[in-house]
Each structure stands twice: as C-alpha cells, then as structure tokens.
Length: 355
Image 1: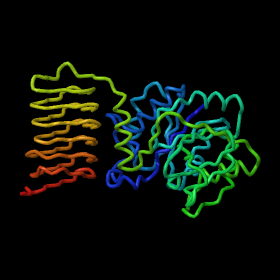
Image 2: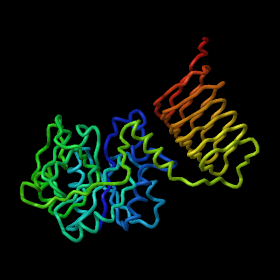
Image 3: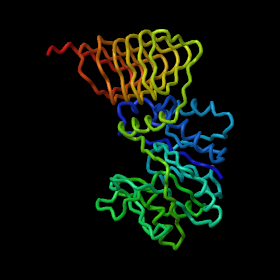
Image 4: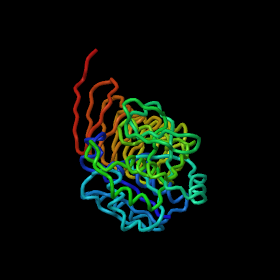
C-alpha cells in the first residue's frame, strides 16, 4: 500500500515562519516535521510514499533525499484547493490501489497496526482515524454508531460529536470516483469530508479507528511547541565525544551534536542542540530545540524552537514559548521574560528597562 502525505498548504497560522518555508520543514525535536512523518510511516511498513507539494518547496525535496530506503515521489499541487483536490492531483501516482492519506501538519505516535489489519481484512471504502478533542469546531468531525462512521462535518459551529478526524485516512480507489463529482465548498476547496459524506450517501462502509496514542496538530505556534515537547520526551541522551563538558551542568536527557562549544552553561532536559552551536553564560531549559549554528550569550531559554543561525545576546534575559526563524537576532538589555514569534533574518533590540 502506498502512502500520500500532503504538504502543499500555505501554513498561514504559522506566518511569518512559513512565509519562507513549508510548515512541514519546520524543526521539532531536532528534525523537520516531514522527517518525523516519514519515520512514522516507515515504522508501519510503508516504503512507497507520495508527497504533495506546492511550487517553491525545494527544501522538502532536499529533506526527503536523505531517506535512501524510501521511494519518495513528489507531486505538485498547482493551487492549494483542498485536501480532496490534492488527492485528485495524485490520482495517477496512486493508481487503482488502496492508500493511506496523511495530512502533513499532524504528528502522532498512535499504533496504526490494528487499523491497517482491519482495513485489509474488512475492505471498507474508508477508515478514519479519530481523536477526542475539546474544541471539535476547529476540525472535521465524525459522528459514529459503534465502530462505524455515519456522518462527517467540516468545522461544525455546533458539533454533535467531539471526535476529530485526526488527519490520517485509509482509502480505497472508489474515493477517486466521488472526488470527481465534488463541487467546491464555501471555502472554494474540494473537501475530503465532502468525499467521505458522498461515500456514506452511496451506502459505502466507513469505519472508525479511535487513536490511543498522542496526536498533535502542528499548524499553529502553540501546536508546534507542544509537538516539540512530546517528541523531546522520547529522546535518549547522546553527547558527541568532542564536546567539552568541564564548565557544563547537565540535568535530564539531552542531545548535543558535534562542533558545539559550551562555556559556563546549565542544561536541563529534555532538549536538543544541533551542530556548531556556541553557548556561553547560558541556561537552556526543558523542551527546547536549538538548531545548527545558533549562538546564545548571557540568556536563558525554555520551551522554544530556534531555527539555524539564530543569535541571542544579553546581558541576562529570559525567553520562553518562542519560535525564531533562521538567522533571527535578539539583543535584549532587560531581565524580564519575553515571548517572540519571528521570521527569518528578523532583528529585535530591546533597551534596558529600569525598575
């Protein structure tokens, strides 16, 4: 069975970070979102994977090139006109075979084995992975009777269920037929929920798989930071042998890659530090990803994601819940905590605030 991963969305909720890159290229726990997705799919035996991208997403092709044991095919969606439209764009690649559809802004550790086995055994038209959420109005929602889906609604104003469709679908080729008959929604898109609804109207069987592992939408700053924390919770300590630790205090699990220079630094994991970083007189706290080439001087950082080449410089300031784009520079002369969402090459200078 092939898998199809959708990465062509504009990522508006993550602007300005996604103004210069695909949201699936953003790092969590030291690796891009797409890399985590490919690793997850490989875990369940998928080797042929199509990745739907938009024009200008060259970084995703470069990323996937390192996955030598996968057969990755890139399919261009000329305009982001909905999930069902992306499936339509990939119809030739998918052929007349069942496939797994994975939305590229979701991460999970759910065990798909029971869903895959049941899908192969019972051959329904579709199987939806569902997760209980507190805000179902923000998602496509499924209403179920037992283990069967009886109705789906896209972002309902008054949800009749708290079961969100969690961005993973198992689909048989009949879905291509119903997609060809869809009309654009009020959003101007071909909705995958409309395709599922069309299957139900035809009397086709649509089954539900209730996810038991964690699941996170990474399409918002808050979601990206949460996913970063969930994945960092799974890391094991690895410190490159060339890293000098004479003036370093370490508590908890940390990953420190080659070429890192640490001077008078405290680290409290879980956290991940990329290659060729320079940290001096700094404290890096839990759930922080520090990408390659980052420099941190006289600052403390917690629960943040710093893209490659960032520079933070004090004297002594505290950052938390931050997302900083590639090459961003933050120079602060205040001891107060700050929270920032900055795109690539942004620069912030904050003056001393006297108390």
